[in-house]
Amino acid sequence: MICEADSFVFQPPVEVAFARRILIKPSAAVAQPHPVTTSAETLAAVISGIRKVSSADIVILESSARAKKVHTVYKELGYDFPNTMLLDVDQCVPVAVENPLSKPFANPTFWVPNIILSCDFLITIAPFRIVADQGSLSIRNLLGLLPASKYQQEIKGLRGIEQQSGIDNIIADLYFTLPFDLGIIDARKRLISPKDHFQGKTEDYGKIFIGTPLEVDSEASSAAETTTAYLKLIEEVKAKQGGG
Image (tube, rainbow, N blue to C red; front, side, top):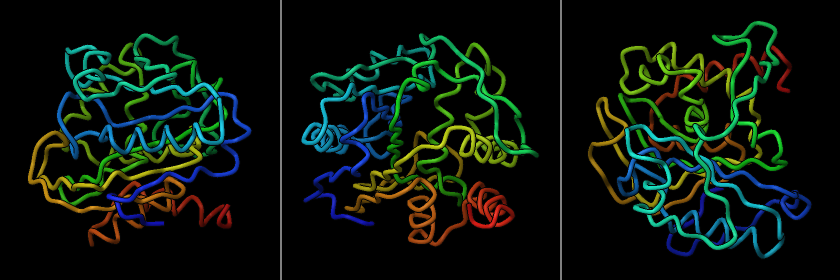
């Protein structure tokens, strides 16, 4: 589903009303405005929609791409929401989660923050970014859940595009290992860059994509008339599984 950003009102899925703890993974690795990061406006709209149907704990979880602390980034981005927990991936206890794929693309096991396992509804909210002619969307946003204590070298490699094929393999594995319930692409504006996720050409777009992470990433990629390599990997597995 595609909504107009100016009139966006979040209508949560029915499962939200029964959730006890809800995780929101924004894209907030740096203190730069939308569309480098998820806008405070879209995040506030999602939280407001949840609160209309649920009193569940709401956890906002992210890691920092630079030396600045995540909580400082949250503050500079205007992430000031009542009755929410704003957490840092690298201050959570990492736990090992097994990749359910019999033939993983890259990792048979992932270390992830323990808080994820206590959440019963997972939402990824990413800006609309096209980097090196590839979509960098809601499923790629899950890379920010990898703790630096376990993935220091891998995370360092994510800053550029030199190892893009390896990154796509990790993203595809994460999709199956951490099955997020809802994907939102915050496309109030769109970022287009030849190589950098944190700077490039910004243009007004005025849309919000909502659906499963695979649906929204596919729809946004189609709208941008670009390919997104990790989507092809995911779709290959699903085809082998008979669409499951």
